[in-house]
Length: 88
Image 1: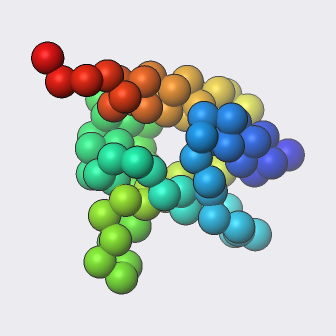
Image 2: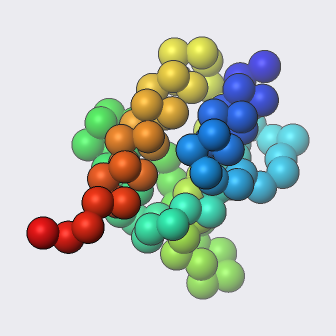
């Protein structure tokens, strides 16, 4: 249930999670994965960056409970909105 909810929520944010049947999702992001990982850590959410194949634009999020999904989606919404703002 939470995998589907997380997938749907991320797609509503304009992201395209890779297909998975595991307990985590890999998601290409429009900014450096390391920046997303850091921003999530600042919000108390631990995720990883996918470093295989030299890619620096994929994050990895473990599937959790409903509260975890809510927190991840809210944080991603903030992070993506901040990334879309032009530099001052």
